[in-house]
Each structure stands twice: as structure tokens, then as C-alpha cells.
Length: 560
Ligand code: ZN
Image (cartoon, rainbow, N blue to C red; front, side, top):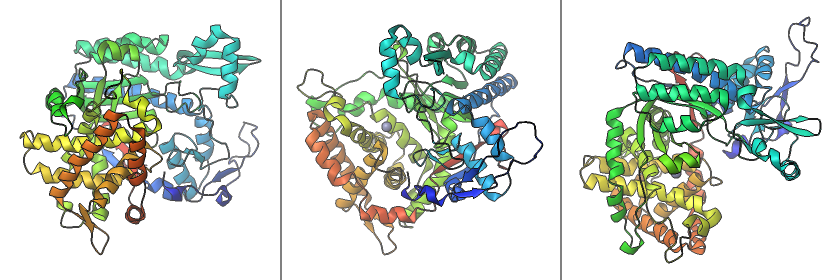
């Protein structure tokens, strides 16, 4: 992520080599445990932030259900720590037995990263000397993709088990043996299933009971299909997402799923408001500033939930925190029942207050910082997600050739830029339609502009960061914002609005034409960190990159 994080390993400092308690039984050799000297700076990139949820409107029974679900979430949190690296718990214990400020910071950073590798810095080892295994704890550490592929070629009948989303692979002599998650992580999954069943008995919500029972079964059978369907049908004040979902932790094959839990409370009124916007998607498509023959209609059956997060554990809590997600990933369910979009409102609010406000303070002229709005930041995220479903999906005149295929490796950055700028464009359209008050127009424009500096910090090696750079440079080249002597920008808001419309058109036309050359030209010209942007980013050095959440409604305290 930030260049200054990538430090030469030569700077490593050796500290506290001795295992304390010389007569302790395990005859383990005394091992060096080196800690990278800037670990406190790394930790400071994450602002310790309370993420709270108002539970006062829940019934006594709902609160009891919530407590059970939090307990289940903690089991999955521990299961994920083992998935990331089976040595993690023992390693953490050895680290915790040492003393000193550096050790304390390393321990906290270990908890943020769920292991001794820095997720913000290409998995660089920050404590100890063990390099990160690309296959995390899912495979033998020395297994390569090539070896696995040739093994499968020689043993085609084992392919299904080897490539399963829910198995771990280990060496047994010459063999690559598979064991299902239900066995490998039994110590966590059995009690997790038990508390899910207890919660199912307590709740009077039929759809929640159905999901919890089926998910408890799945933890023990490794068959998640029925419970994924039940999750799509969940209509409950308590909205829970718990299980093995994303495959990013598996950097070897992108095949093995990681455990995570989001225990949340749904806000039915806010969810209904978003349903209304979803129903307006066809009108937003018609309103796009492109020729009518390029406009399409896409299905939008997916439900949306606005929730407040009470507790998060596992994969989602490692490193940078999730603010929205779209599940399940199983294509069978997606084609049968669609997918569900969940917006984590209180996490967005926490990020807004801990990071966005400080970014804007460094980026925007003081005369415009009052326009910054948490609501605009939230709606930007909502409309970003909605706008992925707008604009050309297929190349015009081709026989169903997807834009994705035509633009290839340039697709993601173009698509993320499109979702951002079309999101802003559509919110302005909703202001025109009086879905938002007229004062929201300038709040949105200022918050959107400042928000691009937050996104561009993720770097242009990544689609969202590159997309943000594209937008920023496009606007700065058109001089819709001018830097004062202190380097802070004053935005010409009407000019920005015009530029937004033009950029929506430019990106959509390139997508419709499937014109990779034009996409490359646009990205070459704008999708980079120019000296002008770098100057501004330098001033953001001390602003945290993300939050370190403390879930107060789940009983967590700030004393960590
Ligand atoms: Zn996106």
C-alpha cells in the first residue's frame, strides 16, 4: 500500500530472544523473534475506533439471540486465525510471553493482521522470520500450483475433493490428502453449530430459525447449499452472515473459503428507502448521458439491507474493514435467487469520522469543509454499488461480447471509475427528483471530491485506486478545483457537476465500443499519481488508512 511501509528487511531489529520461564516443560529451542522497528507506525495506520449499535429497540429475546450469535462469531474468528496459519495461536502465545513496548505494538498489530504478516505491505513479515505461505493454512506450505495441477492430472478422481471450497490439503507420504473443514476446525465448528441451534430455539422469527438450523447443519456436513438459499430468504431484525465465504485468503489458487461472521441489526426503514432507489434503476439508465440505443436494462432482483454491525469476526476483520458486501458467491444460488447486498452503515460512519473528516481537512479549503457529510459518504457507497448495474454490459453490435472481455486487464479500473462517477451522477439526479433535499447537492459534490483522495491512497496498483486517480486527474485537468497557497483545493461545484456528466459519458462510450485502445489512452493520461496528487498525499501521511474497530455493543472495550 503506502510506499513508506516497504522497508528493507536489513532494518530488522532483534529483541528479547529468551523464552521466559526456563524450566517450562516444552523442550522447544530458544527462538529468535525479530520485530520490524516501525511496527508502532504501522499500527498507527489503524485508528482505534468504537463502532456502536443502538440495541434499545430489540426485545429481550432478540438480545439473547444476538448474544448467542456473537458467541458463534467468536468461534469462527478463531477458526479463521487457524486458516490463516495453523501456527498462529502458538506463535501469538510466544510473542505475548515477551515484554516491552515493541512487543506490545507487535502483538496489537498481529491481532489486526491475524498473523505475523502485514496485509497492507504485500504480506511482509513484521514479526518472526517465517515468510507468508501463499496458500495460507489451506495447503502444505511447500506446495506449488504446478505440483497440484500435475497431481490432479494423475489422480482425476481426487480433483473434486482437492478443489473443494471446504477442504484442507495435507501431505501423507506421496499423497495429497484432503480433510473437510468440519473435521479440521471441529473444535470451533461444533460449539458454533450448538449455539446457532440454541439461538434458533430462542427466536420467534421463522426465517431466522430456518437459516440458523440449516447453517448449523452445514458446519458439520460441509454442504452449504440449503443454508445459502435460506440466507437469501432471511427477513429478520437480526441479520446474520456467518460461514466460509470469500477466497482472497487463498493466494495460491483462490479456491479455499475463509470463515467470517457479521452479526448485525437490520434497519427496515433504511432498507426500504434503498429498495426505492433500486426500483428507480431503469429510470437512472434512461437518464444516462449517452445515446438511447446504447442503453440497456438489466435485472435487479437483488435485495438490499442497511444494517448496523454489532460484531464482526474472522476474514472480514483482518486488515482493512469491510463496509459493504454482496453474497453469496455460489453461482447456483445467484442464478436461482440472485444475491443480497448488505451495507454496514455504522462502519461507514466510523470510517467517515475517523478518516474522511481528517482527509478532507487536509485536502479541502476551509471554506468548503462544512459541506462534508456522512450521509453523502454513505449514499456514495450505495450508489457506487447500484451503478455497477448500469451502463453497457455488452459491446454494441457484437454478438453478446461482454465489455469485460473486450477491455481485459483494463476493465476493472474503468468499471470502478464508472461506478464512482455514475454513482455521483445518479445522486445528483435523485436530488433533481427531490428524493434528497436540494442542500444535498453541494454536500455530495464536496464529499465525492474529497473522497477521491481517500480512495487514491490505496494506490494505482489496485482497481479502485486507479479509478479514483482517473477521476481526480480528469477534474484537475479541467480546473474544476484550484489549489490555494496552502495546497488545499477550492472546488467550483457547478463546474464539477458538468465534468461528472462528461466523464460518465466518456467511460460509458468506451465501454459500449469495447475500445481497449481508448481505455488505455484515458488511463495512461489520467490513471496515475501525478506530482500534484502526490503533494497532497504527502500531507495525508499522518491520517490513518483504516479503523481498528471496537464493537462496544458486543462488550468490547477501547482498552486494547
Ligand atoms: Zn465497485
